[in-house]
Amino acid sequence: MQKPLIEAKNLTVRYTIGGGLLTKAVFLNAVDDISISIDKGNFFGLVGESGSGKTTLGRALLRAAPISDGTVTYDDGEVHYDLRNLSKPELKEYRKRAQLIFQDPYAALSPRMTVRDIIAEPLEVMGLTRTRDDTDARVREIAAKCRLNLEHLRRFPHAFSGGQRQRISIARALVSGPRFIVADESVAALDVSIQADVLNLLKSIQQEMGISFLFISHDLSVVAHVCDHVAVMYLGQLVETAPTRDLFARPRHPYTSALISAIPPLDPDAPTNIEKLEGEIPSPTNPPSGCKFHTRCRFARDLCKKDIPKLRAMGKERFVACHFAEEFDFSRKLAASEPAGA
Ligand code: SF4
Image (tube, rainbow, N blue to C red; front, side):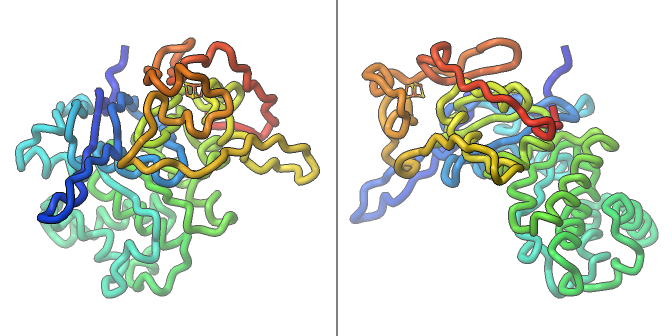
């Protein structure tokens, strides 16, 4: 069996708030006991409402958020790292192999640098090229992959549209030759017509270069079309993971089902059956007991308030954290245009 590229076991990211002279320290588990693995070349989607901990999980896998408990390992066949115990040289090496694409293409690029210098910067900082000619050759190679032409390299970011800026950000993330990329809401700030262009680019990069993606999004319709596998997060925990087509055709967790039911249909006249989620996601500083979703779940019973449901296997490659998942049937007929990614 193929080893996963990146694997987290019982990962917890904990922050402390307050704790000064007059305030009591409050602990917040932004990521709470999560186990997840991403295979080589996989386009892995991570969904959930704002405040569910998606960004923090992505950052922990990049070693950009503290790993308080549990383990995260990275193994691309050339190097094997325990991310919790990286030496400085290992961390430097890991930065070349694991990169981030930011959400906002307007804020992510320095307005004072040319596109050539923006893409070249990681090469120079990480010492990956020896001469200016080497750097220029690598910049041109990656720019072409991201459909930027030579003329673009001399210009400044303000001369570009949002979609073009995001392609510059992608080129910058690719230039060090990463094996793993976290794309955090990377198309959320773009117009719908431009989103498809950037998504197609990411997908072609995954297929041509064999890079694994963690694609973080609150937009399930986008995830349905590009991801191979999807994990659903709620209040710092995973509630369901499955191959994309299985998850969308037959969600087994009430939260997953509610999120999927809210995807607008392609046909505006098609009947909708939105399972409305009552209330807001609770504060992670004071999470509900038992199943964290019980305060908003229409199926909650007494047991849900007391016992924490474990993420357990339900069929091939599907894991669900719900005491009563076997009782629910949230099957839905997929339109021909739905989850093409699976
Ligand atoms: Fe709902 Fe209970 Fe299942 Fe949680 S464990 S999702 S509260 S039915």
